[in-house]
Length: 140
Length: 130
Image 1 (cartoon, rainbow over the protein chains, first blue to last red):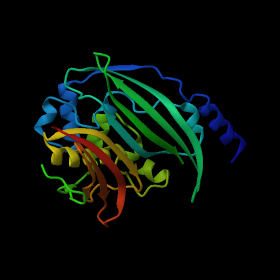
Image 2: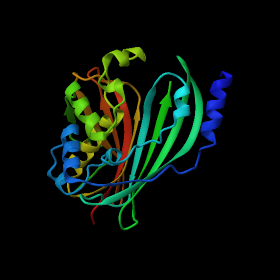
Image 3: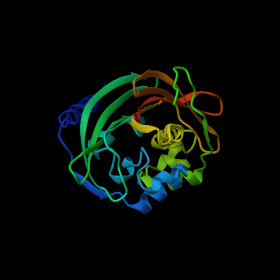
Image 4: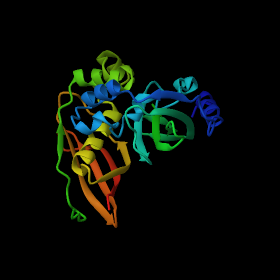
């Protein structure tokens, strides 16, 4: 691992647990419709509520970390986990707050990889935590 | 509803196109160029534009919600992206019941490319209505 890679990892680690700026967005019928069309899911249920992965369209699913882009040359999505606690309905006003949960390096077959795990909480207008997303972003 | 361990979900076959990738990029607001700019995708070592991981997650979400209908609620959906997928090839979404405990059902879900490789693997939990 080069000295600059080490410092990128250290700088990212310093951000673990620090909440990013909250994003507020309304679950709009037209947006949900365009999203359902884009994923090719014609379930009539999406006229009333949001399909399971729609939350990622409401607010960025990861914080913008300029320093991470000093590492490797591109991003890959390693995985996502959604936990659902309450339905997300058309018209809900959702506040999304993201944070960095974990930062680690692994050596891969074509060089080192940097893993950044983001967590985002989605809270509705009644202050109910409706869902939590965990996403693993990889720099390679 | 009688659910048994080992029972398979009806499979869902998707036919993603480059047009769909652009549509999805717009709907999600993810404008990372590897999903629509093949020169840029090749520049970072990919064979061409690839499917968004979250689009494959959406396909697997649909697999579960189509099967579940109004019999219960999806409580979690977890996916790991193990391989890249290219547009213009069918994407086969499959799943099976791995655990039933009272009203809690755990599913294994996965997506296969046209060669039968599991490029996305994951799990889902659902809570059945009483």
